[in-house]
Image (cartoon, rainbow, N blue to C red; front, side, top):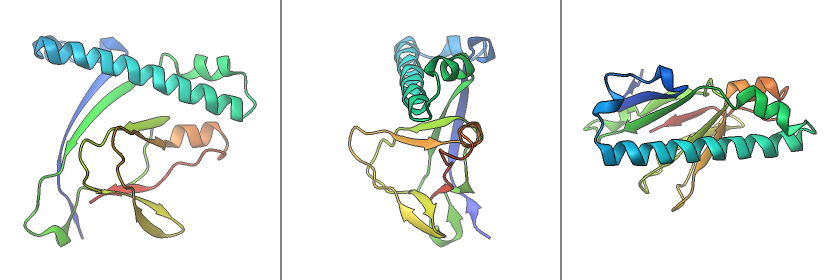
Length: 155
């Protein structure tokens, strides 16, 4: 059995009352300001993607917006350090995300993310200045399977 090998830090960011009041104000101001801008842009991007998906589903985009505009948002930062015995570990075990969408920013050229298709694992090659968007379980259910979640893992 392989073990998860990595560190993660999760921060619930929306709605704002779910933020840890003892933590957020203690973040360095430049980081907090940049984080606020980043989170706002992520929310806007998510709503734009959902708008386009709603149109593809022949839905009224306002219906999709009403469902998800005031939803939860979290930010997770993962770090996968080198392991002296890499054959015994995974960064993250295979899973699908229980969310609507996951927007992933991969900050290095390491190709640790893999997706499962037709029973085989394929590496997702990171592209410079690009985001990876995963459909989550909620969106698969909401779209009656038109948009499928994807089983993935991190090596």
